[in-house]
Length: 69
Image 1 (cartoon, one colour):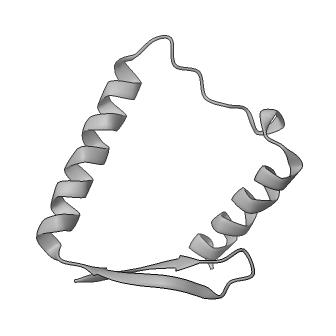
Image 2: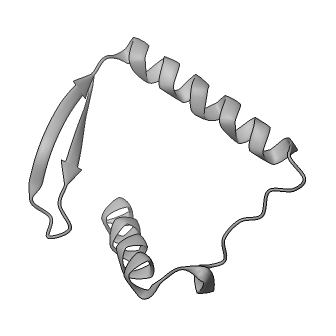
């Protein structure tokens, strides 16, 4: 069982759900399929960090800090 928490920009919890192992396997399978399809597509270009707005860069950095910390 996994608990997924949706946080506001200020770090407060907005809502939370619990996801069972079967659902995680289904979601992971779907994400894996999407990644394989994206890797096979030759016209897909990733957005460079410079292409993001200042707000988007700050939000990305905040999320990465939470994941690493």
